[in-house]
Length: 239
Length: 203
Image (cartoon, rainbow over all chains, first blue to last red):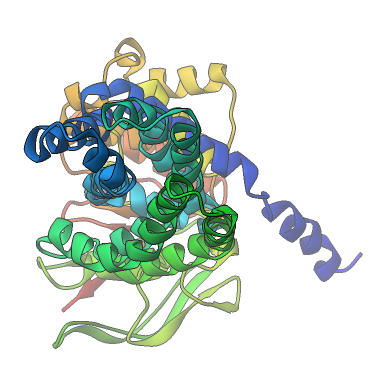
């Protein structure tokens, strides 16, 4: 057996797959969210408070409230998701664990995907689940409430993913939380239009399946491409 | 064998070093010295692949490697000047995560043994935020002991360690070199090790 043949199995063994790395990150992120519960529930609390301000400010005109409900809930959702973005990579960057992520033998996009997934599980998912409570305040009923949850479940992963790219690009920049908002909000516009649009369409009795299809398509595209883009952005930011 | 050829590094407009050539063979340690800001950390970051060099290249086992080359990534361990720990996790959780992320999965027994050998056994359920700087270093040392990587890239490993900690580190380094590992270490202190080592000074 020659030298080449001897070294080949070592190469093969060097490919560790991606799942153990993915689960390691996901587990750590969720554990960290459990440990700092106060911080973890901030987006949800923000969401509820801001959305509750509208009935106070606009007045108790139920018809008006019902008409603006989809837009208000979605905009508040966007802002709440935005709130937690600057922390997504920044704390890892500051304590040096981000460097270890890049140096891990696992493929970086898989690790980034785990971070994004954990971000959605701790922001997008709770926001989607408490949205019906806010919808009730605005006088939405059964069908629209469900539709609201579905649009949020379809759209919020895209918010986390777009946000992850921006967070990775602005890593270490001064005033990065404002910078992220400036970068991300324009990109959130399509998500807002189709998310809130679906509920509005349903309110006015129009077919909304196209809205849902587009939201779902956007999220699927994001799942495929975003981890690679965000991973590349992280490599550049750390260079 | 880890080798660099005609390596140059710039940070902004400033040139930190250029035409740097050296080889580190298996079983050998290279100490990198130089004044503050002479590019020691930048050199280590280039070696581990986090930064790309301005010119020149890194060679691992005779093969020219791009930054973040996977083979070099899975054969090396890099410890920067801050210990990469999550403040809200315990010592054990931090160690376990670091090992999993590195693709190493030693059992609980060996993790406990490693923590014992770096003197953190009784502190293993403490949150990392409650550790002193030296204790944080020791968690990194426990990972080095368990991960079993041939290449150690260490930035100021002696910082914040007490005399006993430094002895512990030197012992670990000797064992590592004797097993055929290699190490590149930036340091301001002399190392008292019974193994072949050389030093380069960055101007």
